[in-house]
Image 1 (cartoon, rainbow, N blue to C red):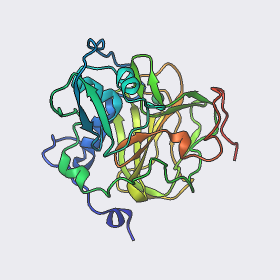
Image 2: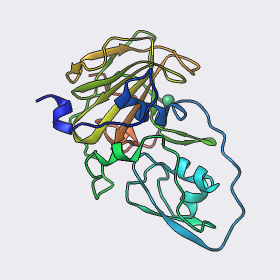
Image 3: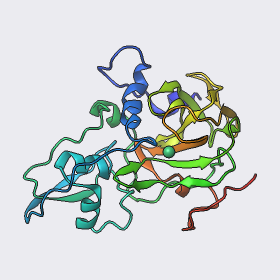
Image 4: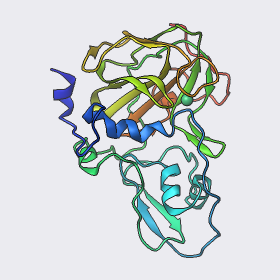
Length: 263
Ligand SMILES: [Zn+2]
């Protein structure tokens, strides 16, 4: 059965011309936050009262903070989030000082995300079955990075290293994108999407079905980078997750010099 059929059609309405319509919302959502730095507003002064914001698909702590003029660090502190990089759809976050729930800029139209399966109750990822796209050290981790938020991990590798699909899926984007350079996006079962950025070259085309381990691109340094590496994102129902929680073997180490398995 085609992947598209299995997942159900996801359509993003009202999008500008020139980009594949089903993807634009997803892609725009990410393009600001790839490897690039974002400058956040200084945290607002402490305020006593506030409201609860219910997390919707496509939102992360950084963007929620922007909507309420609070830094993600402040939100994480106030809500006692151990891992500020992981919030889930439906989670309630206390927003000090706010008087009503405000829209968070995600660009993805709501009707498209509602077509996706509901987020799981648990915060635990559906680990299993993925392979590393390349062998290499993790040079930058998922989560807050300075005043910005890194929606994926960076895996250092030599220019031209073949990049493999972490799981079978459908190519839903294969083109250049500002900041990301040459970018490939795969859609997998279960509302999961994987993103491969800064490629030297993309070797697949949109609509193509790929198997796990199939070479889809080559490592490069296109887009906003300082050297060749793979920027990898894994998204569940359009919410960026820490790829290390999905990829085998390295989930629980704290060290910054992790090395992916050679297999
Ligand atoms: Zn990156």
